[in-house]
Length: 129
Image (cartoon, rainbow, N blue to C red; front, side, top):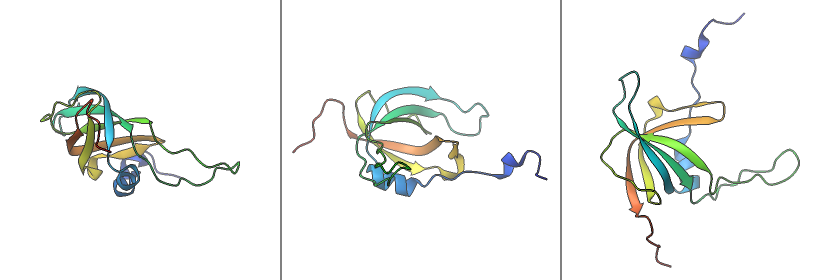
């Protein structure tokens, strides 16, 4: 037998420290939209679609003996729980204050929330070589 509605007692944890290190915590903004928690528990913020700009993690070998592809240039969404920024498409940002209590994984989807983010490089500015 199993419990009814056991989902309320389970949670899939995201290892942000490991992810941040592998991806160098640098992401390019693709888009943004305002966020308001439907339950009114979390602060208002902004949901950002981000592109991975660095990934040097070794994901190992798949079942066919081929190296697994990394996440370079993949997109994902995060929610920054404040509206103190006006990030523009193309900006490179760093995510700050991972909110583990309000972040989780459902299947292969990551629902990640952060307390803040900061601009590393404005859109169109090339880093020095």
